[in-house]
Amino acid sequence: MAIGKRAPEREIAVHIPDTVMLVPMDAKLIDQVLVNLLDNAIKHTPPAGEISVTVRENIEEGVAVFTVADRGTGIASVDMYHIFQMFYTTHGKEADSQRGVGLGLAICESIVKAHGGTLSAKNRKNGGAEFTFTLPLEAENYD
Image (cartoon, rainbow, N blue to C red; front, top):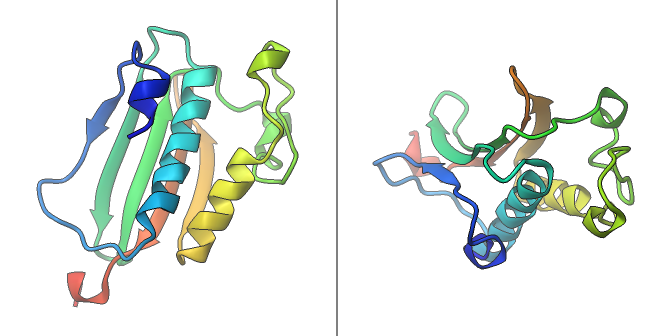
């Protein structure tokens, strides 16, 4: 994944199932979603802070669940309901060079929705943020 080149000094824990899940998707677009979410996690998490990616299967709902979690600054309550809007940037105190133009999360949401999935965000207990998106499994996975 492109993140290794962007932040080689960061350690990202990856948790994936032992079984293969069939998820119909445009791999390049979903890779971009993961890169955007990980870029945000890196931007908002101190160098020694925990960042993880988890993939699991939810057979009851027929979806693959992808979670990018960090132990960074979290999402300010004033920003929570706007973070997926185009051109919205957070009210954090990051340096201007760290601020984006407010398209990353909106693009992520569009890509995930185009695949029939959902994208959500929440703050974690004990600090940090968690972004979770789902993608429908191939029908034969759970028939």
